[in-house]
Length: 603
Image 1 (cartoon, helix red, strand yellow):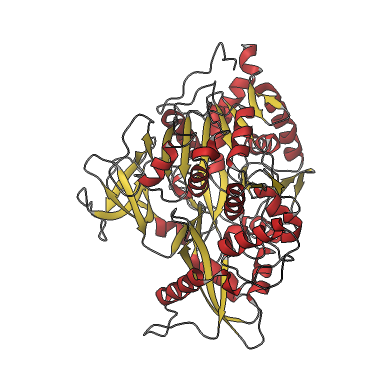
Image 2: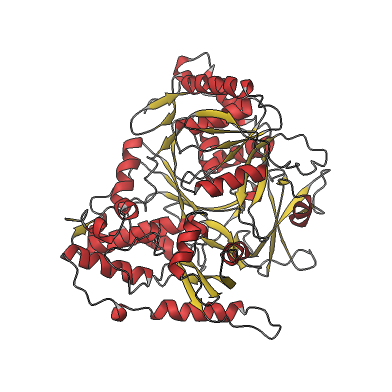
């Protein structure tokens, strides 16, 4: 891979220029090797820094012609790829912030985000267009800070509606500097853009890479459920050197890349693997080291959206011993952040004592869009800092600081959960469920998925009026309105839900009830009908087992039954062990199990 002969000046924490300025400098660099270096790469094409800036300028002119300018928000309804990066930069070019949305989310959900944010315009595959005036969404008070908003990311909210997190340009630039230093990024690196655009990790994959003059590589839009061999092929073809994956996906890949199954899988070009989104264990690291990624440096990251993606990280080189802890530590602060482990009275606790994690330092979000009250609840003045206007963010996470300084995540202090890397407020899920006609009560919980890998599944118990909706109809309703991660994989309808002494739903009793039903769902109840082929028979057996759905039949839809990309990957792996081949994406896109079975091939 050709190196830049005259690289950009190195990023330093003392002078982290805004990301767009760094990219513009590369696009207009006097050295042609810098200008023509690949900024963005797909399987079919590359876009140089100079070409990227040309696209940015064109889109910026179109936005300006629509009247988009300082302080506006522009929604992005684009798939992952070079086009969305150019659109993001064009928003900054005219002084606007962007609102990235998951391309796989239902239109109704994305329309709701556009309306809630008060977006002035939207960019889709047809280009920029203005939107009808929506509700005013006043920005939270800046407390004297001069930091224009870079982007708005919506996360799950405990009040039943998503909340928009505002991240400033300076905060993003500081974070990009910290990540570039943490991962030792250089202009010769290629980082894979893997996360969905509605997930803030996508910003971390893009901007630190471009800030150092590196290359961002993109998968095809449908390539979010890849088998180990498929991912290795894509990564090798794109020249990826840094791979960032959700912990759940990484854990499953590593478990499938053992022994003979890993013989034809190579990640030789990958030097660093970054994981995050939920807790990892040290036993996962041993599995990682026994597979084709074992030569790489492993980085375990942690960070709520409000702390601008990854705020702490634990770096473990391949030649270093695995920590003698059960949970893999989340490490120390990234960049200019400060970590405070405090008790209920907000006093520091001694090392080795559990406490709540508060994150200080300048790379913090500004607050919640149009919600100063909630902003004041989570962002507080930092009494441990000397700088004026210093703030800290209350994470709600229980942690323990080891004597050597590394922090270990222990769990949540409220009803927020992490599933497949997504932060989910259980109250929000319950709000969607009780909003369905006929549903009288609902309780959502997170259950162990029974695989022994630490994975979790979102589950819900409901009570409905006589003659009300079935679990299948409820799931169908939700899938038409919500992103997949907010739709419970397990839905059970009961006459009544258990209550505690105060007359409220007993969440622990509900969790125990659902866990028992989930555990004891067996194939003994499976339909007696004989499938048409051995492929279909084997596929149905695996789906019934993994979804705990004994009545799943040939004409049923995998997604409507609660399936997702990780379950599809597990089905694919189980078939591969038995000598059959089915791409996870084939299962996800098939209309029913019978159609998916027709795509199965003998290895």
